[in-house]
Image (cartoon, rainbow over all chains, first blue to last red; front, top):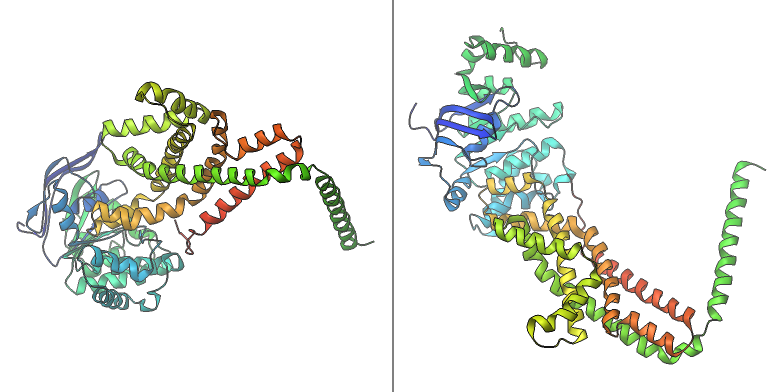
Length: 255
Length: 248
């Protein structure tokens, strides 16, 4: 278990009196895809946001890429450049074109030359399937297209790790697939990914491990085939029963 | 008569009424005391220019002070933040005229030297502009969603880069309507320096009125002078309106 690219060691976090992360220990190896699921308020998004220090922890330790996270602003900023993040609400920059959205961090953080950054951005937009939208503004795109731009924007920094925070939850059903396809492509390309999602079809297809959280604790952690068929904890089984029976077209928990 | 015909008749009557009102008003205006006022026009226009100088200088000084004030109120350490908040709210919660009096009459006590009415006017208007514009700027910055900042810092952008390339452009765009309203209000506030004897447009009109008896013509000029000025400010601010649409 030791020596992962991301390691949580007995991590605790409170929001006021709410114990959002309760003694979480977890390791993600380089190249692994880990899906985190759980009911709303279970702490799964908080867990994700601790990895790039969008949230502080109160106790325990998180080691990312060999270095423990601490409060040194410069070190955290440098680390964040190596970790791509994709948000539920896309969070594209509305005042910048799609191309400029993707180029901004490579230009300003990496100090790349403009034509180099542009080449990378155009290449990535082609990879996520919307090269023709380079000069459009985010408001002119559909949700699915916006989320694919957001993925391209995160990839433009050449990250070692990609974090996805419910990337398809804000999308209309017909757009979920186009975003998931891009993510599957990434996973198959060997990217280290931590994905908070309820898309169990995605988990089954590409996850190395599925983590189930409830009330701030990691309740269950297993390979997908075991997770879906032989969940140990009753809370996991109850959760799977709820989400799998409500999403048509996905494999049933009992199969 | 059908409904469309009756509507057309109503519209015709309406426009006829408007036309009569305009003609009557124009005739009344034409018969005002313009000949008596005419010699004073250069004097009045110079004074209007002076009001513009007051507005431009105080707004420029105000903006320069407003940015640090707003940033301190938003991001500053505790003590400084409260100081900035206190200063902004003290100015905003008291009459502008009082601020002008304070600067004009208490400066000699505090600094030991006299201050001219003109400098006191510039100083007090700058203080007023700084306080109100600081709030416009703060509201603009606060209007940028937290997700924008998160996306930027998550990509490795520093706080400074994030402010410069993500927060500020969106804040400026969002603050334009409030900024326009505030600049118009500040232009009109310049008329208060009339009370400490500065010969601004308002005072110039009042002085002329005492010299030549032509109150209606002069009050029309007064209204027109401020209206045209404020309209021009609106036009100038709109030049900065970018073409793109913001979503969310």
